[in-house]
Amino acid sequence: MGSKISGKDLIKLGFPQNNTINIGLTQIQRYRKREKKESILLEIKEVLIDPAKFAGDGTWGKVVESLVNR
Image (cartoon, rainbow, N blue to C red):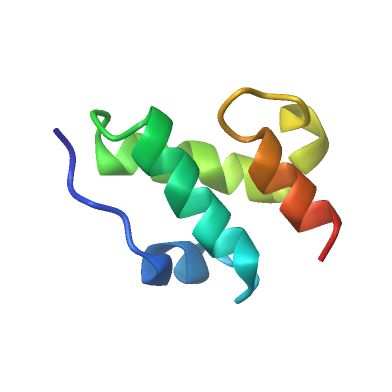
């Protein structure tokens, strides 16, 4: 099991300081909690860079919706 990801980790990646962080942390806890922290952070950084690529994704779709609607 990987180390726990915090809101501060997502802020360092450049996530806006709003509900997007909470949604991201919930999705990670629900779907990716057994993966390594580094691999999750790399993937969620890609979500931040190119949200359209992850629209409709089972794990990151809600995060994308929150990013687009901020």
